[in-house]
Length: 142
Image: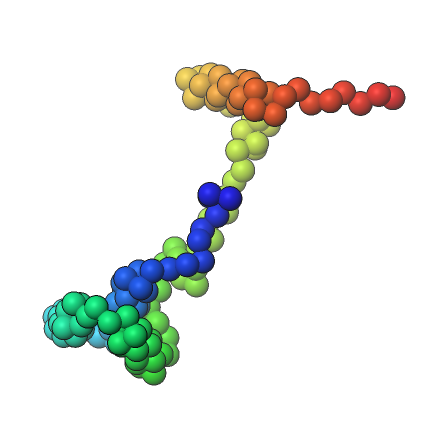
């Protein structure tokens, strides 16, 4: 269970995520870099003013106000990175599974002898690791 992400997020993480979302929103609205940098500096100053607040109730209130402000002023068509989810190049090239290489012709494999020798070695190591970790598979009786 240690590998599962925890649903609990600290207050500082929430503030950092809000700051990043607001910067991305500003980036969507601004056309030029100097306009973006100006607005980003103003945004950062507003976050810096409230950085030292120790009262968690007030901090949560400010965080909620920031989330509401972000929701209210969201860009209708936000900027997305090309290879991110929703981007113009997302999943443009299919991910080819590794087992496809097992069906290559020996003549094709001859062009890359070091790679395929290392690959066969790693496959054997993985089988040994699997047997060590989970034991031998049971044989079926017919």
